[in-house]
Image 1 (cartoon, chains in turn green, blue):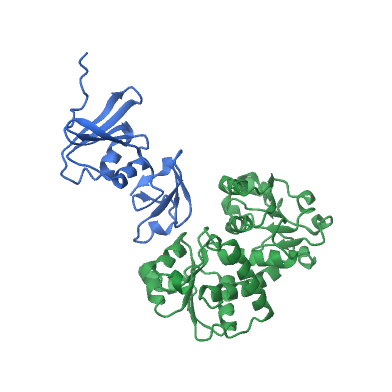
Image 2: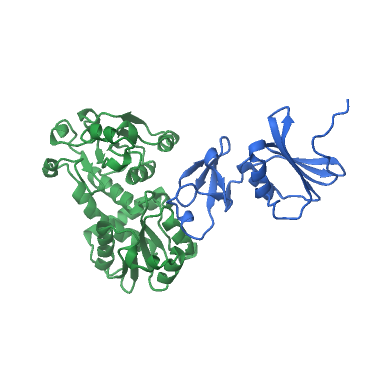
Length: 308
Length: 150
């Protein structure tokens, strides 16, 4: 149970942070980027409970803790944990909370992190719950945007690909609603931005334009181009997928008219939606974006423990 | 004109009227009337001026709190609650969906933690008309037609 008086808090969704708190985390992340090896977590133990494997995210979190002088325990796969014996999530969390000062968890079930935060006596950091939330990804997306653009306010952001099921897309939208953006939503009809998120934009007076054609038109005025993968499994009609699978791919030639400050982001892993030739383009930022995850997670963990 | 009542009048207790006929037995379960020993009269598929066909439940000597009765709004938002004393209607309760509630409703998302762990569901009411609920765990919205009681 996270007691407000102790200023330790769980992070389950990006909406758990106010605008001021987001800006504060980003400021701290910049300090960690300047100095990622500090002893702020000396004596602390972090548990990484990955009921669903995700090597990239887990290594990012574990490095974040290690570089700050903390220690890590945990598991990377539910099949090697007690849940394979039928132990409830409640029992696993309560048991681990006896050993660790903070729990970082990824689970295939939606709402798992929210529930864990209710039964745990230590803060929970959600590293992904099914197709629901992944707040640390959103935070590193925000950090990357702020770092490359020098600000978060009044930006033109083009989001491409799977806008219907894209967890990072929805979360980014919710976070950016604090900062008066303008959006271009580019997606095949089957994967359009769901109504509830368009309503959210309306509620916050955020202008957006929907397009199903991905061309230089939607890129030329953009400050940020956020690419996501269009997955075959998401299509009810396999033939529809075949028609669109290469339509939402970014090629270097499409960037000829783009602004100097444009940066290309992608939550990774990248399959074929960004052509490999783009990697050499100075506007390609997706690998730096992933590295920013380290500093952002250091800030989030330290903040969750009430240390900053 | 002597209009015959389709269901006998109640001396003291609570009447739940204007229940859509297809929801009647769900309301009976919701109020746990099938488990308790309250004296009840149930009528279903009765003629109604307003609804065409309706159900009605009369529970003798039993009064409900707003909280108990508001749950009916989940499945029959237009039902009417009349509180009876000495054959007189002393109060007409208007049903209001609670802003949030625990238990009662199942989350239709099979990947929600609430369907995979021994725990209570938690919902908040996003809209009253049409009824839209939101699961506080998986954050999916549940439309009126998908509402299933636990």
